[in-house]
Length: 122
Image (cartoon, rainbow, N blue to C red; front, side, top):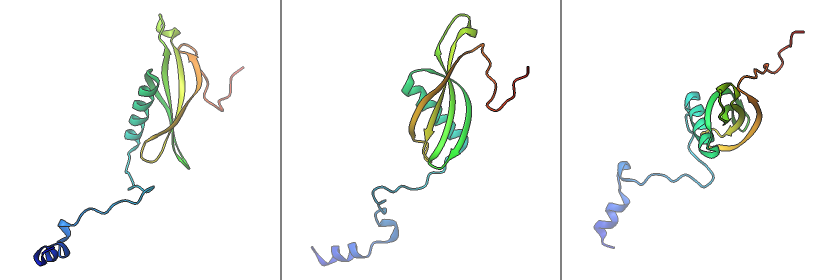
């Protein structure tokens, strides 16, 4: 190596320095808005199941990430009131990466279900 090359390499300006590498197993924090998180959950569930995504039922923050409940059309029927709808629970990490999903319920579109904890009138 020539002396002038050695001096150039040793005295790089901060703008010429290579970016720092992130150690394996670590990542930069990701800022994700709630609408963006829900959008990613809906997109990923639709891609994985091949089903038409309907309503977002709920979003909850947990210790290991986010839980999003999404209603999808399992089976299209005529009339529409006979469509079979399913509720899926989608788990996402802080960066909105899908961790897992599961179907947690099914109903006909015309069947209205009471919210959990709601009292039924007699």
